[in-house]
Image (cartoon, rainbow, N blue to C red; front, side, top):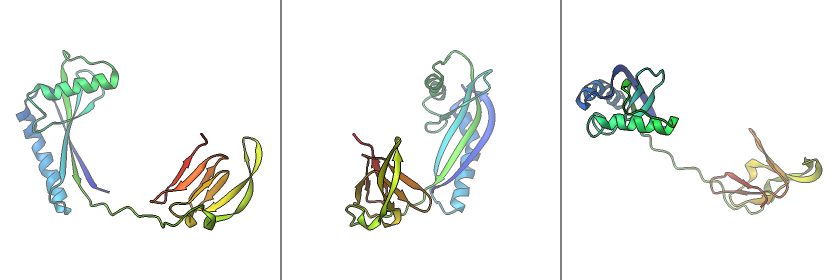
Length: 195
């Protein structure tokens, strides 16, 4: 997983504050974020900036992503994004009502190189090597004979139909009658219902 650190500073400023004023308040947060991630071995962390805004008198805020330095094109960029997000989330906005910035936020992300995803052993066909036998099962009030499979023995490419149970250490997968199951290249069970 990536290393993520969040920083915040309560400011309680008018939403119309100048980009330059916001930049000065963001600077200590972004400097700290970059420094701490560099100390952890990430020479160029990704830094995202956000601001929590609300209409004056509201008791809740909306986190608005900042665009560029200071918040966007001109003083109105941040405010326009806030009004648009408020409209999208609550179905209403009031661009004439005074708004305020409550908190400035910085998120620093140190990207970790992901290991390649493991591939499942291939060579499967019908799951026969994983079949443990059969057992009576009840689906929709009817007793049927279903196959039992050991999950660890299934291979990429295996396909079989329900009724069946696939057991493993931490789970049991139930495959109702008419359903199909296939094991993909990463070892996932892909189960699909009857059409």
